[in-house]
Picture 1 (cartoon, helix red, strand yellow):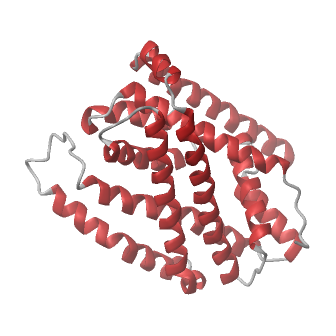
Picture 2: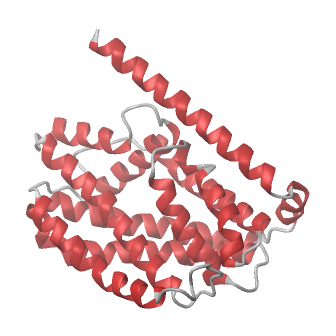
Amino acid sequence: MAKTESSHKKRFTTALKLVLTSLALFLVFRKINTNQLLEIVKTIRWAWLIPAVLIFVLSKLFTAFRLNLYFKDIGLFISEKLNLKLYLIGMFYNLFLPGGIGGDGYKVYLLNKQYQTPVRSLVQASLLDRLGGLVAIVFLLLVLILPVDLSLPFASQIPWEILVGIAALLVFPAFWLLQKLLFKSFLPSFWKANAWSMAGQVAQLVCAWFILKSLGVTENFLAYQLVFLLSSIVAVLPLTIGGVGARELVFVYAHTYAGIDEATAVAFSLIFFLITAMVSLTGSMIAINFED
């Protein structure tokens, strides 16, 4: 009975995500000039996408290192090679099997089964890994807001630049306090883990720069990257499949404030998703050998 209910729940979740993804994409393509989008796609400079893919892979390598630090905090010592394999498999599960156990759940299952590491500790490590990535995104988002020329209706009414600067300074102290309260056993790796988080997210910004170059963008790079960070936060929410549609919606509705081109922004977002999907697919071809 419990299995049947779980199966129905997974199907419902997948169906709901498909509906929301379709709805989001419908809204996106209703808002933009599709002919302009096709013209942009035709003029893509493919050579720029080679370093984009390589830098994206590097960003995932950095974040995999972060997760392995958290594993070491709970007494789980696995090789970086095995950790990277698990990370890629997790990416595949998260993107292509959205209604199932999920990438994090699959890793927890495998590591608990092989090493008898407590499920609670593994879940905490996985959750903290997600939070660490989100904290790096929020910090960089706040930093990039300052130099970008935004058209905000309230800019002249409140000293928002000062508030943003203070918020940026408080991001990591607040995260340290949260970790001390809820994830105390992971504090020994706090600075190293956050360094890998920052390295991973900066690498993704570099990846974004190469994608923008492939699309012929010559100005407002920081504005595109700012909206990219904002879309990354939205894409974390488990509302659509792989963040598809959600990312594009952010770009479409943010263009008025950030001064970016709608069609170019959507093309950028779709290319980034395709790169993510291509790298994630490698996870389906990896066999786990716990003796590595």
